[in-house]
Image (tube, rainbow, N blue to C red):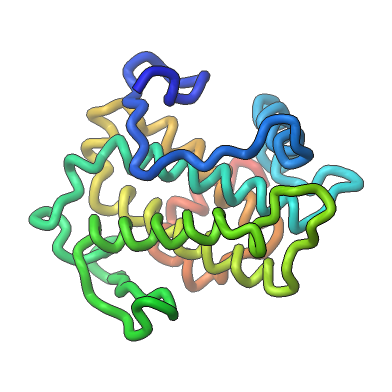
Length: 221
């Protein structure tokens, strides 16, 4: 699909996304915020880049970045789907100590054990449904965010983290073969700085990648 890849992509990168990309409407305030985020990211200082811009609404900033992380993870996972199969990953894990079972509280109330590709399909579809829900993620100016927005965003980010954790633990070799390592590390580092800045994911949830998190963030303390 021509033009689907990110502008900054290296020529070798597959432009295949796992799910359709979630677009923020051009000309909207959220689009301006996303452009601001991209510009500050370009400065190379991630700690600064994730901070709430002066005078902006925290909910809106978290919303824009959550959509962006969904799109990034969507693309990263899209590059390794050939390696993440029912056979290679019969359970959704992040190393030998961490296994995830899927439940969304509505369609699947009791957690089910399933393969990683199935779990990630459930997860990304569920996230997409949340992002497309105008009552949760309003895209129109003046429409307020719901009172429970932060708890919804925290659940989305907690679950998106599990896709990073699975890729790092189970599929890092193909990531290196595909020369996606720098892309994955930059994306994950941005994600971690963001969730740390606003305290969005419980430390215990981050345990599967704790060593990596310390390594990636220690240089910027």
